[in-house]
Image (cartoon, rainbow over all chains, first blue to last red; front, top):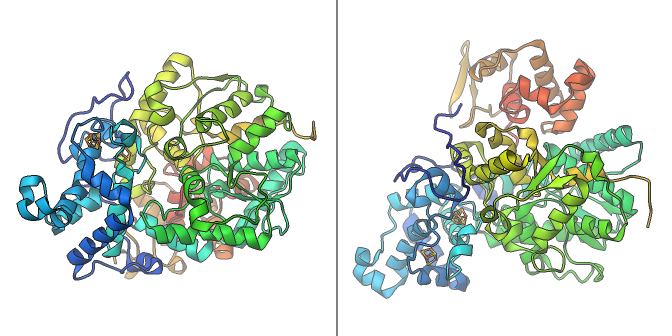
Length: 499
Length: 111
Ligand code: SF4
Ligand code: SF4
């Protein structure tokens, strides 16, 4: 099935040791969205006739609307610090996957049409006309950026390639050149309420099945409530949690925590998705529409709190923009953070003795954790600085006999993307996904070798699916990937204590 | 649109080979798709494919992995009701490969 070479894993993670190969990934493009996918989002069905003018107009709108974008485009000094920091460059060796080169694809056009020197001196100052070739290049390489922002950590000016990628995708959507995977999914959210297209009866049936499973397995009546009016907590979780392995083990973990804490909670069939692909395509309007499903569900159900399940970019949108997009949240209980992450919720309970966990339940497991890019670099958890790194580790450590971290250049705010983020988790980009996972695979292989690590926990639906798929290509088992709350699910002691 | 041809009948499919209309599916088509995927259809494979189609008819979506493993356990024995066994049957993933053979649309999302 695979017609390319799987990268060889090097002993030292996070260093460039792939062959420098111009054009190595020029052939790769995701499937184009069709009219059926574009039109429901308000985009033209296919490439419009006067696409060049429309694209430049849209670019002009964006640089006016987002001051940060103009600053990023104006301030790069080509110092090269970011060049070898992108997992897609490390894994493919294609110089256009160096963050600065990726930015230049957009910057060169911006120069040509929006700066005085570019208008006059053109290519002398790195300015380019927006031709069909340039557009094709955009389509290819802006879909080889997972918007993970690792490069920005190393840039002395904090230039964020992710924001440039989002802008480029937004411009392309506005001339009818959308990406099938993302746009098809967003259209499903508008119609059905989640990325999978899981209708309410199927969701209800799935949740009922989980109640039976947990009852049979533990003897405890753990509920998975749906659309319960007047519940205190609305849980918003990625729909992959209902559907896939090892995601569902995490969902079972959340349910057990709520059960044991004795709180009333519910999920919503209307807002049955935490993810917000509007961010991936750089569309404020889509992000707004998707987020406001959560607001409507919270109001209709009359809940007091909102808790998010394990989803990386959802947490970024929730943490950074939910208030702007879908606030004000004055109808919720001000005693609790809006929104709250499930890991914060569980961490507090463990600390307070509100739930008990027994690490023996995960006997034989040696854990490490993959910090999700969006959680690591675009959000926080809890009240302490660095809480987004500390809290997941504390929860995992409480639930397993042994925990070790991976190489310091690959965790915390320097974490690598799993290789499938930013709307790239699609089979048509499998080559990129496999190659882009290389840096994480190197770091993981190192702790397997040196520390006897048996499992890697993840806290994002995309990371979980991506790793499950790519690990076997690197000779590792897909079962190595577990949900943070899958570990909690095994370790939590049901029925032993009530606050 | 590209299409599969079997005995003068044609079945339109998308870029990845998923047929566009779940209702035109036939067993001959499933056999052809399985062959293309390098899968030798045994009675266990057919059990899974038939269950997928039944479930889809009722719910307009493929079943979640847990729902599928439970159904498999019921029909083929508890030792087979797990994700690992499904991957043995459909190495590219029961969700996607089995859906393709069963004529269901490709599941989307973060899976
Ligand atoms: S945001 Fe991430 S994927 Fe995009 S260029 Fe920077 S490091 Fe690479
Ligand atoms: S690190 Fe920043 S300033 Fe330096 S080349 Fe990269 S984007 Fe430009």
